[in-house]
Image (tube, rainbow, N blue to C red; front, side):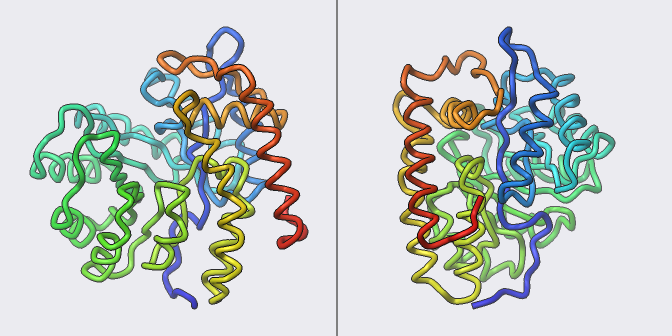
Length: 307
């Protein structure tokens, strides 16, 4: 099974955590080191200053410094998270992104104020009109409180030339299939690591993930196996990832907290999160080490040579 559609930014992308030092200040040297580490371990692209990067606790100047530093550190595409629930603010952040090295922008639908579909559509059109960069929309109703309707997505993907992709975190594969059927080729990415394989089945090109900080090679292998028609192998690899998917989000340690714990366990100086995300619970790094060792031991049996 192959697809003629070539994604703009590759198949596997991580929403990169933002490193902080012991005082909670932005650590640009650590960010550059982490970006290079991720690029060498299965990531085709990175997204900075988005949810897992604790965007809500970054100042605008920190966002700019982070984007500039990461873009300078790697040759793979770097997207900037520029979405917010304030259209004017999103436009301002998006206008800055191109000059700072971004290869595109990720724009979440407005959260908290829960506008009607007309407001969501107008928000996305305003942001896209403010830049020549390619735009990836992000539909994550568990965080925003409202889905982007099928009709709005169809209009945006058909009518706005630089809206080229959707990060789908709705958990609704049939809706994604209907959207692809109505629009044609665009970059559909899984926005939930665990739904990547189901979305590949309906036409997704890859994943914009969190566990991909350490599972990038395995996700590359899943996508490659699926694209060449080896669904059995894709399922086998997906099964290996289940402990990682459980680890990354629990009742006591959510995405950025867990990813940072794993990165610390693997020698990356990323620090802890900023409040309101507390330090990871005691034992999280030890659990991360167990998850990592289990994954690599299992993967080596069916994917020899993966880093």
